[in-house]
Length: 114
Length: 115
Image (cartoon, rainbow over all chains, first blue to last red; front, side, top):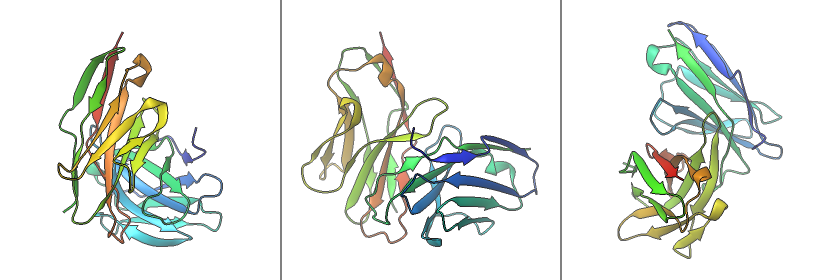
């Protein structure tokens, strides 16, 4: 196991609602990144946080937002949920902002939007 | 635009035979390349990475990958497959000059090792 924990493991929401997903990073890691993995596809980068600041973002709309806390845990917030937001959301932690860092992933949160 | 292609949705190999999972990439600058494995109901696990130096990279569980700059490929290999290697394998790339820290992933290849 990687030491990265995500909660909840499963979540069902309806279109238009808001959702918050949580991630606890591995001990000693100060960087957290979030990914969306649709069924049968590879993960897509949402954004990355380093020491409580967003320092990278993929092609996701502003209704996807995040936070990183002083203990380096993180939240992913999605507003105005759409059906296409149904996916596995993965959190990964790493040490430093080095672009060559290996990532340690949690098991993910499976979000279903009805 | 950066992209990763894994041309095979599924690879079937008999136990004990060598295996290859293919990956090609496209980046504007120089690449950092990664392989991850995903077991059912579990998160992604790091296998190996290419940063610089020797084109042959050795990783976890006996896997290795060869970086080929001219062919823009980073194929994953193992000399002798085990049934326990059956899983979903993802190739990913970062452009060294990308300040956005974005990791681009392939769609994954399902590896099935038959006893």
